[in-house]
Image 1 (cartoon, rainbow, N blue to C red):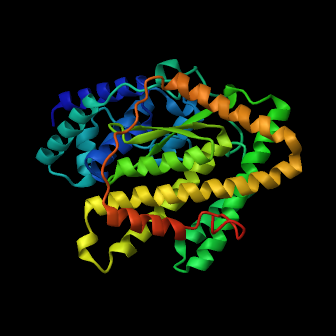
Image 2: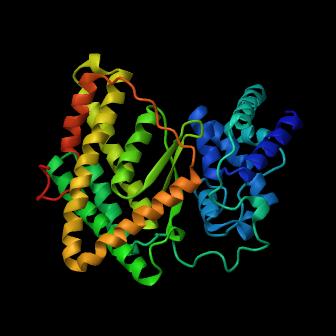
Image 3: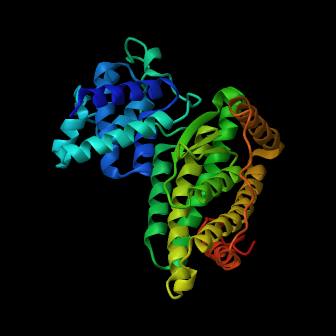
Length: 375
């Protein structure tokens, strides 16, 4: 195995991590373009990078979370797993890949890395890390502004909603989860306003990785859910992720809800096409997903309005300017970060898929509660 390919891989990874990419972004980009196996080669390169830059002692916590998730950083010991100057042959031995095939995969990965664009940074790049992250890392798990116990309950409810085959049971689980989500969002807004005011300093960004197939439609789905919940979303098709911006509680809950509803949409699409092979087309599934998202967003808007009305009775007229201030803050941060955003072009949609998706959206368990399920 040529040392040149290893050197060039390291150089490309170094450059991309300096130019706004994060470890999880790169692994996702390679997995999306090639395979899970190829993404493990990229993870091996990231392990080498992490050793060279002493990531455990210097990187931001969000960066370390990504390394833990991909198995590069040992959770308990806090040390790097793997990481050699020649990752390609080491990866080939682990994967039991012939050297010729390993070289071909490595060259493909390198070519794709070189094609990736510069990104707006969300975290400090390695060259800007401090000598030590001691004192900079939080002592608690990140939950944004959501109480940890409530977050655990919300996740458990959504998991049960996704797992059951009984619509009434799923509706009950997700209804309660949505009620908790909306209430926590409003409570967090009032608390933040009372402490520091609703300024754009509280707005955060997160990248949500979106898999093929139908990535454009899934990104549209995410954007629709985010818009209802006070979150703006920008789709980067070449990178394979959407950047969502909003206040921490809204960003986190949007991500949770998107993941849960995407599971429901996938199930509903499979059921809609199970008994008619003629419907198992890409055009049908794209239209289905867009229509599902459209109807779900309408129902989410009704759900949020219902809970907000109850909250206004609790907090009084002060709630309106608080929520308006947060909306303005998110919009200002979004405009500053993405001044040149363009809309995705409109496309013709399969009529059967559209109507089937709207019907499935009516049945989706969004957490509306009994008072608005017919909205």
